[in-house]
Image 1 (cartoon, protein in one colour):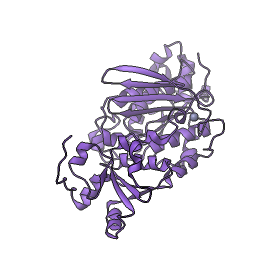
Image 2 (image 1 turned 90 degrees about the horizontal axis):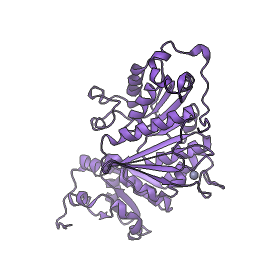
Image 3 (image 1 turned 45 degrees about the horizontal axis):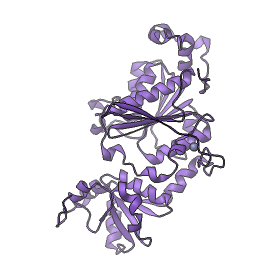
Image 4 (image 1 turned 120 degrees about the horizontal axis):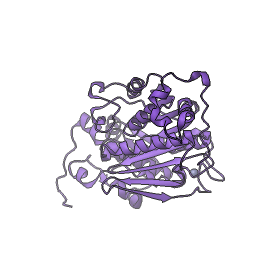
Length: 389
Ligand SMILES: [Zn+2]
């Protein structure tokens, strides 16, 4: 048995809910949980960052399990393309705010729960106030900058973190417990990991986050109860195509920027600010204006999409460096020109910007990518001389 790491507040005798024994009979029947464990769950609080593909199953199972306080951070609205995997939402809720919609769904499941909707964009300015109120943090975001921010905040605020990520047919998960194991930055210290497209760009099997989000809920419940072996220093990798779970062991790095022996990240906002200060985001209109004003000699339009996307049409004057090859080909972007990274909707290009920021170079992201450009200026032309791959 693991020591109880999440320090949940013990339920007060007089706050025991009337339906406790009936509703949670199958938990109470487990020797490892019992009535005392169920009361611990009722007294515990879990924050889920991102009420999306991972956050949906995690929130539903934590609510069903009787975790007394559940927080949801999301500032997005329900989109029809979310419904393929975000099982908290229905067709009737398209266009509604995710956090508030999810709260209503969880309250319907169990009206005795306290569910808090945080409809904000998580950042250095609000993360400490929000995280401070919860025992365990679940990271269900799909943006890498936020993933590092959450990790750093959990290390600095000494909060247990259950992290998961999904990509195409593959999922990853790991758990961080302060003082007991390595953090996410120990696993992926450098921003080269930024060269991973998010699922808005890359596609994802809809049921995949169902598996990974359920694993996150499992870890949170174990941490609250202090039972079993958490995913400490172990990266769990799930490959849905081969239906295989693999595990990679990793250690705390003494040179880790946030949990190492002499950390360089000592405040929550610093990592985010340092990385993002060299990145600008331009709308298609801003880019068009800059090009019209004759700044093309100072800029280099770099399209980081895959070859088939590039072949279907590209912005005039752009060069093609697929995201996966950027690390090897940074030399093709002259130091006297600032790259304007371009992809389909702006996710992969932001990853490219982050990579460049990590190298200490300025970079500009075309917000909304070719999709946004096309809606303003029409679809970019297909190349005159088609290359065959
Ligand atoms: Zn670390």
